[in-house]
Length: 79
Length: 246
Image (cartoon, rainbow over all chains, first blue to last red; front, side, top):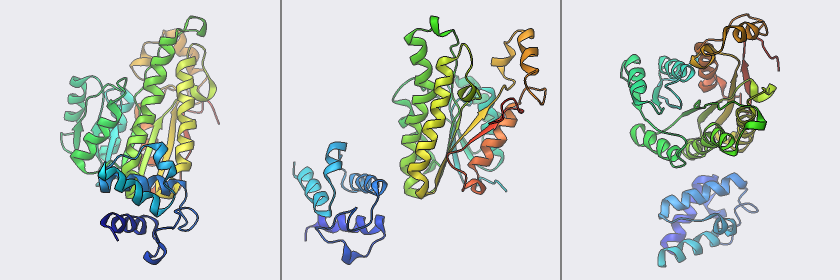
């Protein structure tokens, strides 16, 4: 697993207070991990801070799963 | 009760009568206060009156769209956190609607409503992260009752109430409360400028038969800022001598 994936999952575990085993790559923040809309905004803010990237609103809307977040951040970092 | 030791507060419009009283009250409860206004000399005088300790001078003009975020950054940079935001700054540009130009409308809305929103947005980031925070906005009785000649000001003040209720719902689960204090007629430079006849007419409409003092308003703010007010959110406390019972 990549460093980005590790770090993303760690942030999700911390913010949503869920068990690490539940945070699979395919997990949806809202459907699988019990996040509400405010949680997802906070997650995006945490990703921005942790990775030093900016995630505009239209991109943030499309980040609904752990994988979405990892892919978006890796794409930004390699850009 | 109502102690604010270790808390950091930002009070906008601190050079005005009510703003200075709010800053003084929060400071007396133990908070560190960042005071903002356009007039630096008066900010310095207030800082000195507060004894110079636990005070941060942060001159700013809230008509500048970049000022709110910069202010919050400055306070968080200096003190690590912003726990209490008091949106007090505001001004009037009164005239009957028929004569009110777009510029008169926009200028009041910009400073009295948009700037508080920008400040709240900037402050909420850290507050939500820390799972604690207080936002108190100073509205006005006229935001609820209306007042001839103040369509712009009344709209802005009513807007603060609606904004605060919405923000309160958004962040309630994060330990952040958002409330409003709506003063009635308070003795300040603004009301001192009223002609004698107008003042007498005004007093006849106030059951307590006196104008409010800035301290009357500051007490309500200090309460809402305190840990004891944790279960009060989305509310408007009317402090008006009974002039309107809402």
